[in-house]
Image (tube, rainbow, N blue to C red):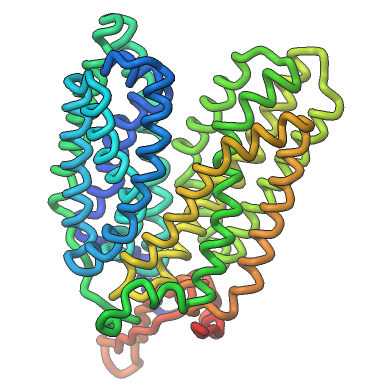
Length: 457
């Protein structure tokens, strides 16, 4: 929440102080460094640390990645029972041990076992992290913390990739082993950094779920399922930059592969540098989270329409092609910076506190399914026509935006628009003291406005 002090007609915004608030973004940055050390080199990384062939490594990672999704439901239930912070620490521990053991997993059974356990922790991690965000911040504070987390994490990705590149360049193939241990160390350090973080007291919709209800609560909540479905459609857009973009540039546009690396770098740097700024500007407009997420989806659609135009024109000049692709990445990244904080916090705020773990585990399924479906879907469409996958993404982005706006009135009012705490101090003529009153109202809304009407149906 945000406290606003109003003294004799003047207003000063005072953000609510979150106990140990620095811990979450810093831990996200350290976690990003570890992840960035292996994600850009995934197949090569695991090939060198295990000694297995690329084909075997790829197959094992695909199978264990899909199987790891089964960890989401129990992880969500564990969050509701033990709290997100405890589960987050446990997942950091599993990931640290897993990467420490990878260099010793030379046989196929050993590699598959370590990969399965690590994949389960990796798949559950984002849902638990979102639940932790909901436990330690409320109202507009969640939006700020989410934007800071994402910016710091993206900065960590870039730093981790650079660090791994330097280690491998200096140590050769042995550098992959050092990178694996460095990744394990980063997870252990991130866990230690979370120790000062303390959850806020429960408030709002915090009633205990019915005994034995479990995930039936989530399945019965149609507005939340619509939000989850819209996120699946937008999650396909996030997969486009890593899966579709390189193939499109090289195979359809016949451009140099270096353009794909430049696009990734530009996107990562902008997310790290501009994430907090863009998120702050969106919050200051008083935009509803549903509308902000829909705007992000509209920008995705605009970027994909530009890709269709490039795919039709197919510029022969590398300079012209590069300029066009830079423009596309800029629009796409702006959409990401607007959509991501709003969509993630919308899901956190729409979930009842007592069942937040289960709700966000279900929400995370939309990300996992999109990541699993995207490679085969995009490559199949690309084989038909290079513009076909972008046309599909235009439709999915537009549909996601429409779903978010249509379901807005059925979501809790404080999920659609964050509330703030207003402290009004009115001086009296007869005394030097004054009166103080507290009121909750939508962030950035006029004093005489009302929260958005809405109810869960």
